[in-house]
Length: 183
Image 1: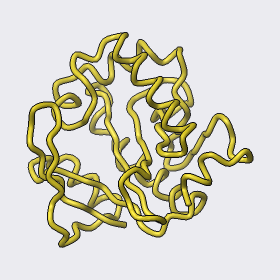
Image 2 (image 1 turned 90 degrees about the vertical axis):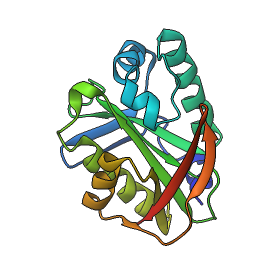
Image 3 (image 1 turned 60 degrees about the horizontal axis):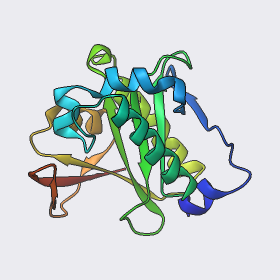
Image 4 (image 1 turned 120 degrees about the horizontal axis):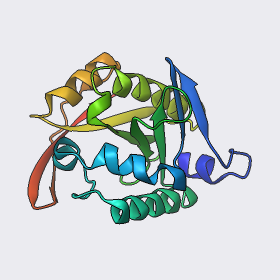
């Protein structure tokens, strides 16, 4: 269902969501320098699929992937801001690899912006969008057991750990066991 929603002509070309003191907005070309500052970080490199180093070339490639995913109706990546301008991180909603009517969220917060509950608030806003506008009945998070910060975000945003076995994937030379959380 989300694929249809994302691809619909009546969904705004520039999606903006707000709530909990945040404005989530589409990434633009103007954000490329900010992306490098946010995502060229050892923690982001370790816990996310984003490449390292995350330089201007990586930022341009990421923006192209973001736009392709949005046009294909597979993913929505939004910059996390408090003012509608300065990006402090990213939150994404993905339908890829999930049963119909469900999807998953991901997020990354720049090192200089951590400790402000940005991830929790962005997950809350995006979950509300996923369940009310995109019509998803369940929203998932996939978190490695050792990622205590993301586990805290999940709990604070009302997600609970499922008893599903972890999904094992190979990414950037690491074997990941991703535990599934649901809301």
